Every structure is written in C-alpha cells, then in structure tokens.
Image 1 (cartoon, one colour):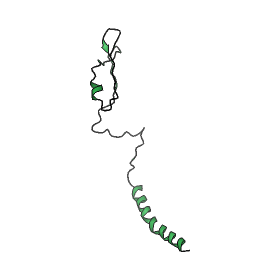
Image 2: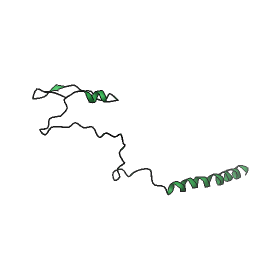
Image 3: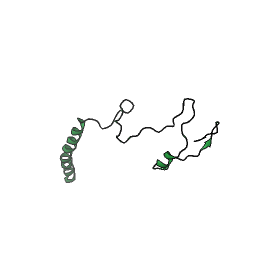
Image 4: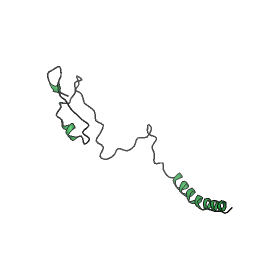
Amino acid sequence: MKDVLRALTNVVWRMPPAFLVTMKHMFKKPVTLDYPREKAPMAPRYRGKHYLERYDDGTERCVCCGLCAAACPADAIYMEPEENEKGERRA
C-alpha cells in the first residue's frame, strides 16, 4: 500500500511541471518547416549550387584548370583532361 501511495504522490508532483512545459511549447511558433511549400532562409555563407556551365553550342565551359579540385575541402573532385572533337583539352 505504501508503494502505491508513494507512486501516486510521485505522479501528482511530477505531472504539473510536465504539463507546464507542454503548454509553454504549444503556443510557440513551430521550429520545423513544411519543406516543399516553405523554403528556409539561405545561410550567409551559402555560395550556390555547383553545376557545370555550357556554351551556347552545348560544349562544356570547363578548361580543366584544377582550381575547383584544389579548393574542395573534402578532396571529392578529381579531374582528368581529355581532348574533345575539336582537339581542345577539356574535362
């Protein structure tokens, strides 16, 4: 019987603070976003999406200088130049 009363008083004393925390967060603005409909603000250091640009005729603008490979902090870029149809060395 003592254990039941001790458990009951434990629940009675611990429930109100838990409800207060729940009520406090219930009326705050949600932290998450509804992603496809809402876009998150861009970070100030965001530099843009990486992509390979092309000339109007469809050829790649990369001249295989190796600067992007040297600047990549994860060493995830490896470049191997080859000659294209025009005899130019490109990536």
